[in-house]
Length: 294
Image (cartoon, rainbow, N blue to C red; front, side, top):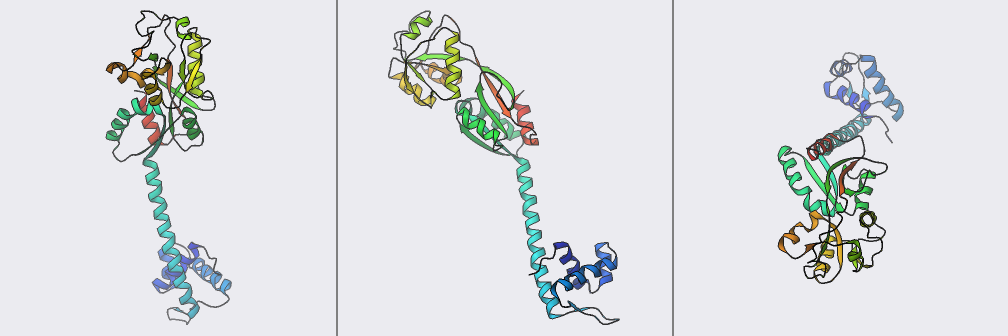
């Protein structure tokens, strides 16, 4: 089995193609003894000569030399193809950015900004991954995503992050809900009705629960746990339940009159929309983060 390096095979190929050791040395920019050393090393490994050498004549390939020359052509061709493929892949990766986004953010905050970025950098390749807060953070931690967009109530442990904006939270119900017509809704009023929440073991649930406690809603019945805000909104339309949702997710329904925002005695705290990431960032990710910060 031949285990020669591509460099050694390239030296040998140049000797054959150029018809001599001296010409190969000039082409490669190395000393002629170095060329001879590479060829001798190949011959030593194979245990037979690669050239028929006659003083004053060009070296001619032996049968073994012909076999090694064919092998060298194949190895060097595949090495070049692989090098080119890796260069192409590196070029694609330099233009590629993967953004993970919380589902509510992906539908509201992200689309317009992605469109603007794509116009500014038409050669960029943008990949988006959408999921829960936990999904987004896991993708960024694993470096599967360069940037993550999540709703948060503070910094995220183990990651760098930047606050992009503050998102209001709305307590929403059906327009037919008994509290919908009240001028001022108190914490006591809210605790008299069931709530629809996110999954209890989710970061989002704990963020919302903290906000509700801050406005005095310390004891409330959870009638249903749903992971999708679209499902929450649909259930609200057909029940007397209450849900606490980011304003961006219910803006259209409120405008259309299919859901109502309760007028609270105490305004809930806003959540932060944060862009989370791990350094170092690739150039395209830095550019997108810079645009998000404008």
